[in-house]
Amino acid sequence: MPATMPDPEITPHLTAAQGFARLMLHRAQDLDAGLGDLGGPDPITGLHKARVALRRLTTCLDLFAPLLRDHAREVLRARAKACFRLMGRQRDADVYLTRWAKDDERARLTRKGAELRAATRRRLGQAGAPGLAAEIRKDLAKGRLLGRRKSRVARQKLPLAGFAARALTPVWAACIGHGSSLVPLTPKARHGLRKDLKSLRYALEFFEPVLRGERVEPLLADLRHLQDLLGELNDLDQAQKRRSDLLAKDQGLAAQAGMVLAQAEALWQAVGVAGPAWGS
Image (cartoon, rainbow, N blue to C red; front, top):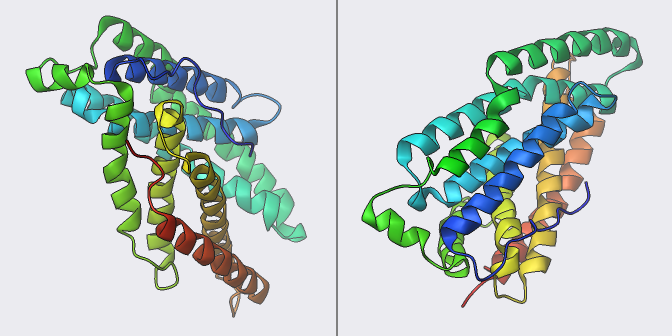
């Protein structure tokens, strides 16, 4: 996928609250675009766009939690996560069909995929996904998401650049907390690291226009590559599970996973040694 460009209108003179509002408006716009493409000529790409939009939305809510009303944030986050989970089975089915399905199972999986896609759209409608972006815009316009306690109001007035540096610290710590090596991690643990790396990547993309640091863009490039490698490992693991009816694991998939893990390990070591890319 192409590198994501920073959100427009994110500038150093903004307060934290202003930055949050502008970032969330773009999240709503991305969500509308992704959901709108689910029924279009390329629903696989539409599904990917919608899932990314929802992940970016929840990351934004997490980063700005110190500014927000707890209940309003939790409700919105829960709705976004519920919609994201509804798309999970469809995503896994699409990946397997397009990459690893055997010739004798392709027709059957294509039919099942179409049925699952229709069911997914129906469930998303029942979950209120089509109207979620409009509700976000309304909440922002009426100030429903911002907290009203003195401590939260004070944080809302902080310069966005200073707030960004503070907000990034726990996200970085969560990634590093997975350990210095990927080799001993289980597939589930590596998937957990990948989710944390996504949060760090999205946060850096949000804040890049106001951060000072020579390594911000190189780190972003490393995170994108590492995310792709870990995603490949996860897809290979899922493919092997889909073939669990065989007497032995598919040796081709296992060999490919070993090569991908070696690349990811080298890159993870480099990211850890380089350290955070932002500062005052």
